[in-house]
Image (cartoon, rainbow, N blue to C red; front, side):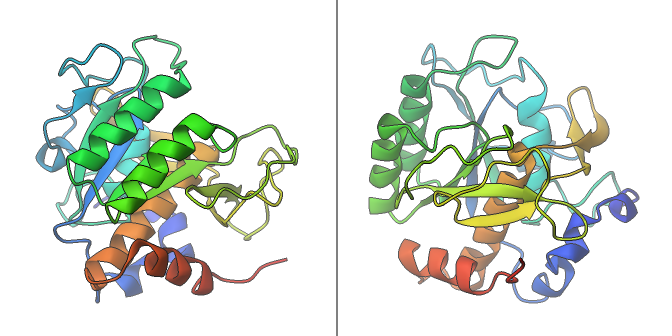
Length: 255
C-alpha cells in the first residue's frame, strides 16, 4: 500500500503487530453514513450490497464524501499494492446510507432504522460517525444489535467540550487523539467517552477514487470499529461485552 507511510495512526495503535494474529476475516463492518463510493479501487472488492435507510432503496452511493473516507479508515483493502491500508484488513463493508441530503445531515430515526437493518443482516460491528451519544432512539437500536452479538461505535463529537452526557452502555463513544496521544483540541470529552483513538490527519479513501487526510472524531470512530473487528476476528466466540472489555482494557492509558 504505497500510502501506508502517511498513515501514522496504524503504527500508533500497533495495528501491524495485530495483523499477525487477526485480519478480521469473516467480520462485517456496517458503515452508517453518507454512502460509500463503490467504484473506489481500494474499496470495491470489500463492499456488500447495502441499504438506504431513508427511502428503503438500494442506493448507497456517496452523496457527500464523508462515508467513503470513514469506510476506508475502518477497512480499506490492504496489502493490495494500492492506496492505503485499513485497520481491519479483510473485514467486509456493509454500506448503510442514512441521509439523502448532500450536506450529510441525518435524522436519528433514519440512523436507528439503518442500525436495526444492519443488525438483521448479521453485521458484527456498526460505525456511526455522527453525534448520536445522547440519542435514546439510536441507543435502543444499538441495544437490539448488541442482543445479536454486535457492537456499535460512534463519534464523540467535535465541539471541544464536555457535553455532560452520561455513559451509554450500548454505544462505544470515541474521542480523538493526535500523533502524540494527546486529545485533539476540538474533540469532545467527558463521562460518556469510552475510548480515544487517532483522529487527526487520517489518510484514507476519498470519493472519486482519490485519497486525502481527514480529521475529526468521525475518523477516530472507524479506527476503533476496525480494532473491534480485529478483536472479533481473533476470537469469534467472544461475547459483545467481552469484546468491549478487551477493547478498553488493552488500550494505552494516557493522561
